[in-house]
Image (tube, rainbow over all chains, first blue to last red; front, side, top):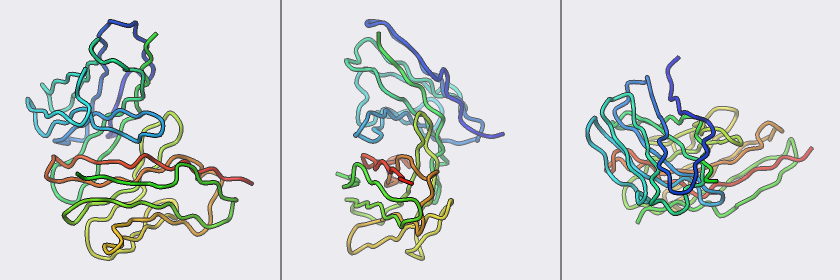
Length: 113
Length: 114
């Protein structure tokens, strides 16, 4: 079945450590996105990528990094510079043409301990 | 700047009652509009979308939404709510000039009482 797979579902990190969240899609979509979700704030865009080897900062990119070496994969690294990393992280993908919608993964809940 | 406002943080309705969730947007061009639903700890599922044409759009699970350009609104409705509709609902604007990224509202949590 086609879809977006995020792993792991739950992730615990010690303060000062970097951690990488995985996102893989087999929908043959060009664009991929990372959103952060906090209670009462909706979803905020961290990074997005329209094509391989290219990505742009979203609204809250500080403390995060991404790569897009393959069309199917868009991993997100939460660095130690991110001051408040505990959140629910959602990956999405879409075709970058008119009249399309984004498809979402099931999310990764990151907790800093 | 583009923004989406969902004025109701929580809404409680009785099972079988009608539902309307409000959404207002701020965007200069003709918007692409979406409603997504999220169950706790899960990803988002698309309910419906508006790109052009008929301003009343039908979605899955018996939901519909009406685009009103004069009011910059895209309210979600359902004539009879079921207990399984309890979830969080997000309105979003799609920005094609930014790689089709979505700007989301803060969400409305729907509670259904029996």
